[in-house]
Length: 439
Image (cartoon, rainbow, N blue to C red; front, side):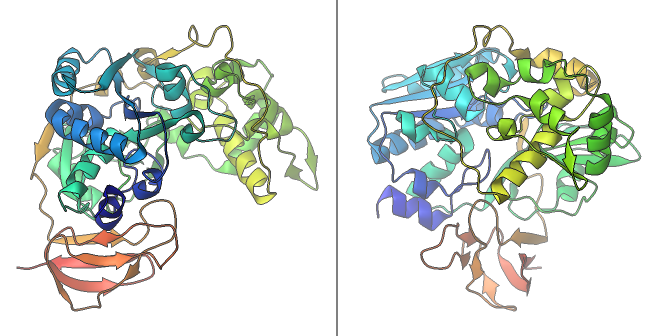
């Protein structure tokens, strides 16, 4: 089997973002492959833990990726502040064609557009992908999964950080489908009486109160906060409230735009223009602006830049959804040039933590294996980009760990699913496959 076939068979998807099926990326041709170890979401440590403990496997996955896409150069990008990890990575790449690129401690260093420019000096066309400038970007956990796939091992586990208001912040390796509740218990339980979850991180994650949600292939981490924490209260407002507040209070100061990482690289993203659009309406509906079309949803404008505590990121989210419904496409031929202050306005990670009132939770989260051994897993049938996987087993079937249980329909974008534990198929519905562990 080729690496593309092995990766497809193993069900590998991007572990650090939207979960795009990795075998599709491996079919391209490029000059350089970049391993993304920037991990800029506050309080999350899973990529750093992998770089520290599995650097040789990351290098193996990177070398295999380079060979598949015929790249002549590879880089591992990580933050300079992790001195011991940097040394471990340098030791792992010694004697190879892979370089180590050290990043500053700023947010969002891991954004693909920012990262490609930082490492190569190239600017991805508006609305484009790294391949258009000769690059492929893979998260470091994805590279571990590629290395495993080459040995015939499917994706059945996930590495994630449990941080915030818990007694023992921890990075765990758990079977897919493990409940977040089990992960939080393994991190010593919440230290607050009214916990809420930011699944995926504080900046770009989703607010939830459901501890029984399952871990998926794209769950990078969970930050626990009290329901009365300023971030939780802001994230808990309704979309209508956010729009009303913005319509009444935005004074067009431009801070949201001046700190926007995409704007600073030269892309046509101006959140203050989108906020201006809240003040114009037809039949009560906001008039959205194309200035949101290339927004990366990093959240800096809402959670850091706005001096009035407004919600430009959420306004951009709504605007992009409206643009998508209307079939809007960016002009990829528009010339792009970085703002003269693009590097001078980077937001320091520690400054962001202070603005978010998260300093008290800024602790290490060491990697711990086998802390969670669930008796039951809920395997989401859709765990990334594309369509949901179709079960190939029925209720009551006995499956071994690693057995194929679902795959996308022929010819459609998606990823295969494998049993994370040995057991019995307890139930199947439109969203999930539930596996009960053998007692």
